[in-house]
Length: 107
Picture 1 (cartoon, rainbow, N blue to C red):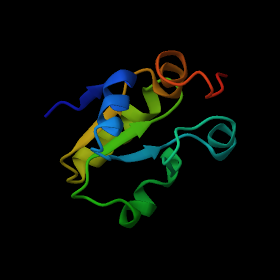
Picture 2 (cartoon, rainbow, N blue to C red; picture 1 turned 120 degrees about the vertical axis):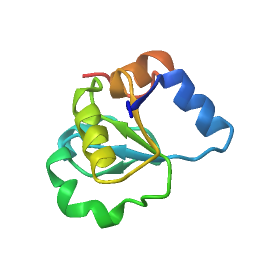
Picture 3 (cartoon, rainbow, N blue to C red; picture 1 turned 45 degrees about the horizontal axis):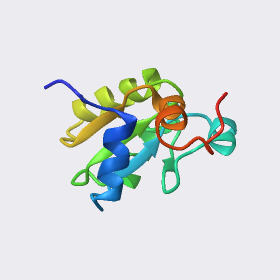
């Protein structure tokens, strides 16, 4: 099954409508410290296999990175190991900054 692609605007609407997905940021700690979406949780891409127990398999998960490449890798991995409600934020944190919240720093 293909991974759902979610635009920054679609994610903003989900959050506004109180459909609170688990926002999983897969970037590195220095990137997350520079810019992130409020409420998101950092688990760097290379740590996801060891930290699966920290992710609720029954919750909707939106994966976030800088431009959407690493988060897509993470989404594919989670889908392969049995997660059903997985979405990728298209354009990543950069799209979020441009389309939704300009207070989030671009880099």
